[in-house]
Length: 317
Image 1 (cartoon, rainbow, N blue to C red):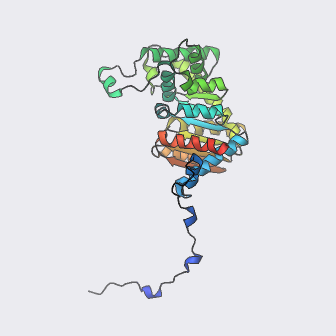
Image 2 (cartoon, one colour):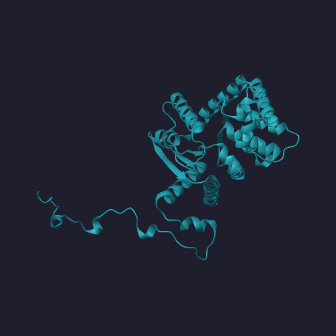
Image 3 (cartoon, helix red, strand yellow):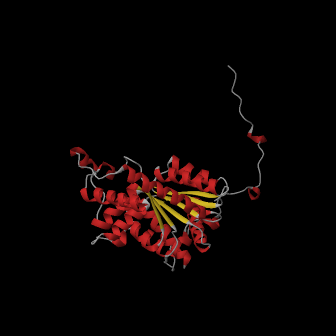
């Protein structure tokens, strides 16, 4: 049996380290807390590598979009509302940073319950055992009545819910409703339903025609808002793994179909607790192939979104 060959390392070519490109340098390292303990100092102390660098780029993109009067569209899923992020979204809307707010049906339901009753998020397992999961009378009737009225008045779903909340004589927390606050602040607000996927669709008052009419109107409104992303706008997808990425991709193609290929050259970012296929391809990757940049910042909403909000406000001074 012959002896196996071995590579002759004495003939290996080497290069000077000074000529080698490096991905990390000492100047990009993090800094420990110093005399300045402000939030701005904390941000400056982060290492300028990988996701910390991407975080800064997303903050800069939002600030530039706001100053250039471009659209900043924030899309949210239900978990974002349930983790107490509403006051931060409201503040960004109040400052004129968020120009358009889009959400799935789950987010709208949680927002409605917080506004009316001050609490949300039932025990699904317990309710599923006896068939009471999702059967809250006031939630189902209130929202479905709003859709029926909205269809008659030619309102979108988001507008319908906001108007219904505004008409309630005694809300527990009107200040914490992103739907109501967006409507009152003149921020575009849309809700995108998935028939059969939301608890209010099992309610006796559910009207499929009203759900479809108001939600489809909001789809058209979102497509019109997307036009203002061109040349510097920003889209954030926060906590929606399926519905909002799918809706966004279709609304974007409508906008480009009607506007000779525009919008292009905007920034997208997916913020979620884990990475999913649809946000990656439908938000981060495909929409920016014609120009712009896409980012993924993975982490819990209750940490990442406060950090982002504070960073944007700090950068705006």
